[in-house]
Length: 321
Image (cartoon, rainbow, N blue to C red; front, top):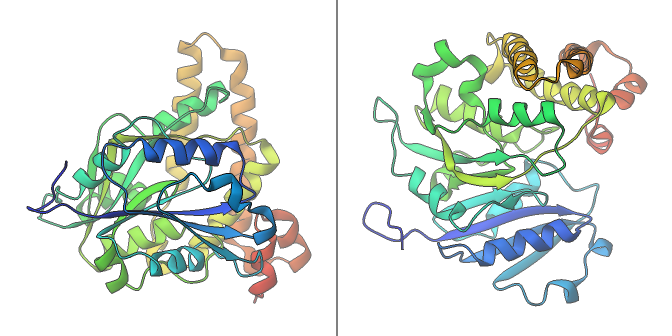
């Protein structure tokens, strides 16, 4: 049984769910197998009609709350989930991420023992993402680029070296100190997505806190997005950055994307799959176009925004300027 600062920390897992499938069942099964005890699993399900209580009667300590699609918000819905938690540590996960082994929760809890080089307190710890079996070859490298095998604690002192990667974190699987989360006001209440990086940016830039990457905490999670999906995802990513200049202002992220493309191409040559390089370059072009348009979304007509976004329902609630 792991201990933090002399006492056992309680843990709740909070999972936003939409149209649950067999992956969610595997997720629940792996959570039940964890070596570290989980106090409660809190599900924030979008649209009650998609949820069948009878399918999940066997899941221990499960608590389900329903929201409508119109009510769902990446930050706001997770804040509601946090409101149902009384644990010391909250682990947010997505419904398509599956623990890779029995030590996921234990490894996340251990990360809170660490501090930054200047003694900064770790307030959040995110897991390493490993590719699914069906993951495309180039995307496998992207996983390893964004989620390397070495753990790291990131603070404001890392901004010069890491740039925007200082704030990189993912609510696909990320643990938070609940008391400090509430003290900070939780996630930004209305955001198209990227609530995790916005929280990390505030923690690092304005509260003198640290973000931990726990490489030994592992989940299986990946997507095989096509060019259009990547365009839309990067459009939304850029919208979130444009809406929060206090976090992302003055920090360029394009250079990180260029570095990823170069390293991916080199890796594909080493894998003796050079014919995949044109596809990587084309998809990267779609990513960059989406990013540029998202950064300038306020100058775009609403109809064009709705064709560029992955999250159309967000724009129904939040009018463009």
